[in-house]
Image 1: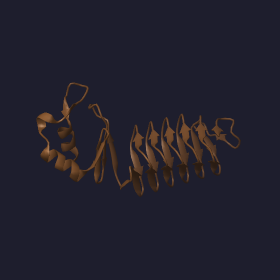
Image 2: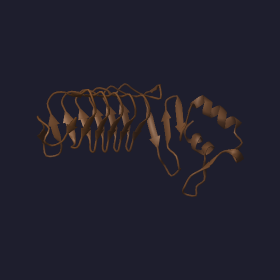
Image 3: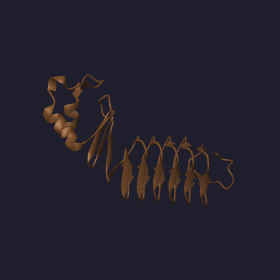
Length: 185
């Protein structure tokens, strides 16, 4: 399904396009305009938007949800795959992804955030000057592609030989995994 400025029922408010009611598709939804829906948005496949997606209720996709700007829902945001936004991701209730969640800005949920099967109330994503992304959850930390509980990272730090820790960083700072984890444990 394609939602562009000519989609039936859309009204331009000077900034974005508004739709009264719900939007659903058994397949995928491609959105080419900034969109505000009073109800929910649901797709059996993926949902992709070049700009922002805002729903008064929930946003759900059987596959991934991706927006060039923000993703916001008064209720929940759920995807069988990943959720990605160039700006923020905000849900009044919970955010759940079968895979990863990534935002250029902040991620906030009124109840909980779930990714990689781990439920958390807080999710902080740091891109920093190091060459990898760090995801910090209540009980787990993901550094690059390594996801471990905070206790597992603590044990790793206690046992790691500093000279053997991988040297990471593309700005000459030579951050080690040890130095990065020390900031968040």
